[in-house]
Every structure is written in structure tokens, then in C-alpha cells.
Image 1: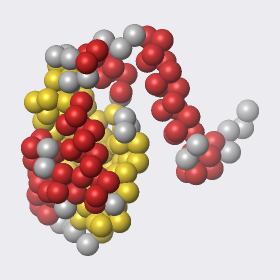
Image 2: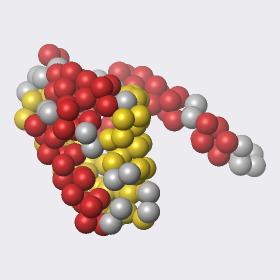
Image 3: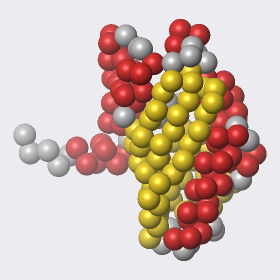
Image 4: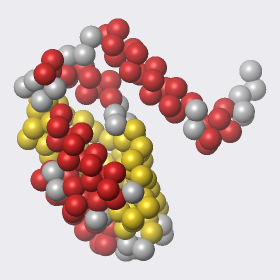
Length: 162
């Protein structure tokens, strides 16, 4: 995939996410793709990815916007910085305006996304929402447990000397 092709794919992805168009969003992925979301967890296949966008993202967020910046591609691997913003629709945080930045990794296949992973500081989002510190600690513990249980990290942690 060329740099221009990758940039155009990310423009389509961001525009579909912003509109809440699950079909167009999922159309940026291969049929068997996996989308790893730091809040909603993994979603496999276009139907699940479309469902996540329409019935989770847009259930919880109003005035949603997502854009990708500084895309870089090397063969079947792409990275991009992102900014997203939304107004919370979650009843206890309703009306709070949130801005999140992150880095996304894309495994590419046949001009589409085969796997999506993101690194986002969810603590920044939770702080803007007004999540209480004890609840933030529980969520961050769950995220840490999820990270530490992955096959890649289990193998990587074996490198500790102490």
C-alpha cells in the first residue's frame, strides 16, 4: 500500500466513524479483521465492528469526530496519530466534552485493515469525564490485566532479570 493509499483509507475510516456509518466504517476492514478498542474490547469481523461503532461509540457519544494525522506506512504495517472528540451521552457524565489523542497501529491486507490496535491514555478521557479516582483505578487495573495477559506481553515479561 502506498503512503497516499493509506492516507485515503484513514480519511475514509475517520469520516465513517464521525458520521456513525457502521457499514462504511466496517468496509475499511477485511471481512475477518479484528478491531481492538481500549474501552469496548476486541471486535472481530465487519458485522461486529459496525455494531461497535453504531451501538457503542455513538450510543455513548454525541458530536463525535475522529481524525488521523501523520500517517506512515511500511508494507503491510501502518501507524498514525489520532485526535477524537465527543460530548458524553452517558447519563452520569452527560454533556462533558472530551478530547482524546492516541496512536493507532494498522496491519494491512489487500488494501484494507486486517487488524487495528490503539494506544490511548484513557486516564485523560476519564479525568475529562469526571470519573472518580477509585473507579478510574478499577478501570485502569482491568486495562493493565488485559495488556499483561496477551501472549506477546507474557513472552516479553519473561525478559525481566529481577
